[in-house]
Length: 80
Image 1 (tube, rainbow, N blue to C red):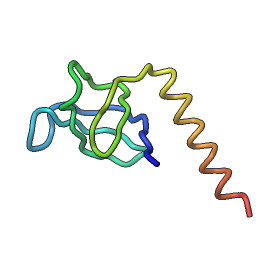
Image 2 (cartoon, rainbow, N blue to C red):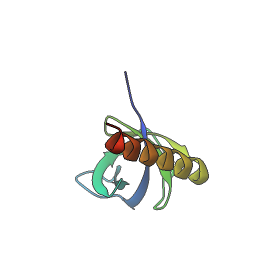
Image 3 (tube, helix red, strand yellow):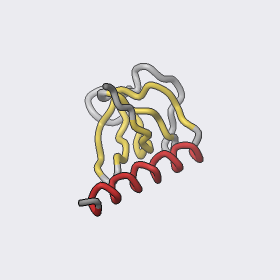
């Protein structure tokens, strides 16, 4: 099973290669590759899978998806 997550780009052109970006992954900062995408800007949401941004995502859809993940996580913590 594969899981791709929406993440928000907080920095572009960082790291050893200019095609890298820093993203916010639930409060954790992670460097990812933008090699598969063009024209990614700070503030964009991208779908992240195994360290690569696969596609850009509509901000509203990204926020809804992240809210659902948060709800699932909270539910898992409170369910015996």
